[in-house]
Length: 406
Ligand code: AMP
Ligand code: ZN
Ligand code: ZN
View 1 (cartoon, rainbow, N blue to C red):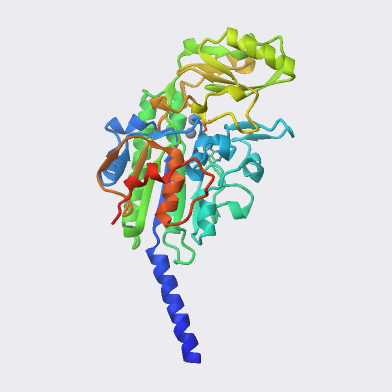
View 2 (view 1 turned 45 degrees about the vertical axis):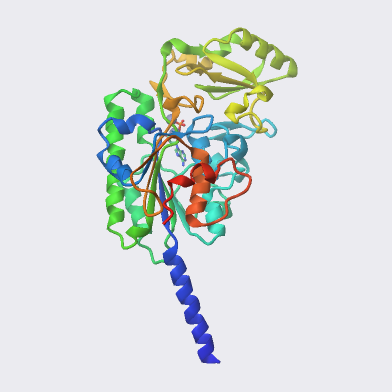
């Protein structure tokens, strides 16, 4: 009897061991605001080498609005912001007065804002360990919905140390080792905003993140599990220089009415104080529709996939390409704006980011057209052979062709 038990225990251990070994590792790296065409500037030797050996999409199409939190969360939930709930970097809950702001450490941890299921939650339910060295939403306070390992966001934490930690996670004993890891760097977004898309500073930032990609890749090649590691390099959106002749102070147009404004830039949301104010504000904005379009929430074209979520304001303004919407407070600062921004409609090519995939699961030397960021979540599920949520917007059939079927 004892021998039989021992035999089954050994078989069980052996099968678990095989399972752990047969599953892939996936690292998803985000370079915030890395525009699709920055790879063509001849300053990214590492990324170019990595993409030549893997899959390179012409661009990665963001979801609307092409902002940081909405898109990182679309990438890992497979949903448009309208469905996952992070409809902007700033959200106002008109029903209870609460605010969500990316600079507010507490609000980003509150589970109520997040209606999508992040890939790390799907993975963990399927017995896959996950870890995050930063990703919007990763600090959600419900441990059932967060990665197994999480780092609280620290903007200035040295980039190399982030990579060293990720590599050290991949050296952990197999039972503790995460198989899915996220990693994030803001540098290209910050320099793009501050100095514009044609500046020396953005080129230095591009070269810097390229060297980080090279450093990470080299470290991984030295690991015993190197042949099971897949890496995705993505970005949440691109960047567009602002035309200072297309700045509109929306408050000057509607000063006689009562309202609350949320956000500025390519997207502005207006919460009128009354039904009457709503009609008047909308009519006034329609009369002055220069460099932007005004929409009633329920009239937003389907194209945006934006307008159904209960927390979207009754009136939504979308700036034309290169234009910028401001409020009185920003206007008083004499339009001391960033040089460039993002948030515009998802089909403006300069809003597109990058998509590079390298590793045993992917085709080699494959160039594809544009890929949609909502399709990455079902791609991750396919990589790990687990079932995605059925209520997502992403589709595996649009992206499966990049996988190596061997
Ligand atoms: P934006 O350009 O306004 O869409 O947002 C970019 C900024 O988001 C970055 O400069 C970071 O400071 C911030 N950010 C990115 N990831 C996180 C995070 N996980 N937690 C808090 N802030 C973040
Ligand atoms: Zn961003
Ligand atoms: Zn940005």
